[in-house]
Image 1: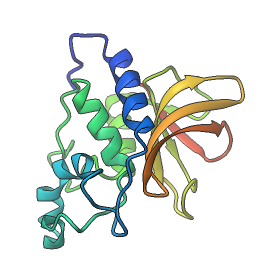
Image 2 (image 1 turned 45 degrees about the vertical axis):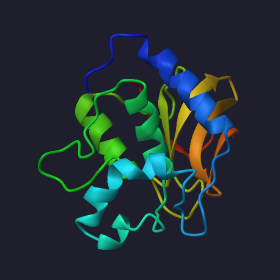
Image 3 (image 1 turned 60 degrees about the vertical axis):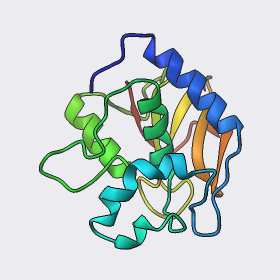
Image 4 (image 1 turned 120 degrees about the vertical axis):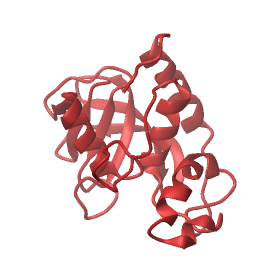
Length: 172
């Protein structure tokens, strides 16, 4: 990852807050014009395994795509596929964890994140581990304020308790 020359964390926070505040919403198939800017970088790569992704009316869970959009818009040089030897993309929460581990930036849930860090959740929006990712905007003793995508198929700002649903943080 090549960090941008400007104050990248501040830019991430401002962009994340702006995009999340728009409350952009996907359609019934988790696609649509409001969220296509998040999905579009991944369509060609996803279509290698499933050609339906070339159809703009076909979508997917997109919380990780939201985070990727914010970081790349803020100037982070992130490839869609962070690993040469793996098919996984930054469109998958688990790949963010693997990537951060390889970069030495993965922090456990006891870490105190700073604005612009990423938060990884277990079983927050589903019964799956590593099921959601967001961007920390504010850290208080009992909760985080986050910017997230694909919560009930929308972007938004959230007050999240610091509890067992937090699996990891990624310190950028």
